[in-house]
Length: 109
Image (cartoon, rainbow, N blue to C red):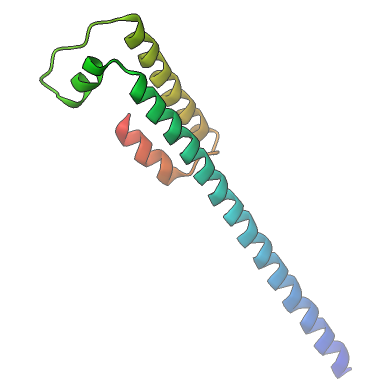
């Protein structure tokens, strides 16, 4: 009878440890996926910022500056940026993106 209780207790403990391990694995996987998304979108953001014409980029950083001329290069860069913002928001709304990452990006939008 005592051996049976020990085996039942060992089974219960192993189930609890297994479940905790599964939860930890899922949490780690989600964090890694968010890190990959963050790095991919940060790279895209950097590419877009580099594609803006120089005068447009400077006008973005100086609040009293004149608006940049709307050249074809500016329009393409602005559309790429708006598309990136839209994709980021979609990822957040579909819960593919961590709230902390979204809050950081949202401040920049």
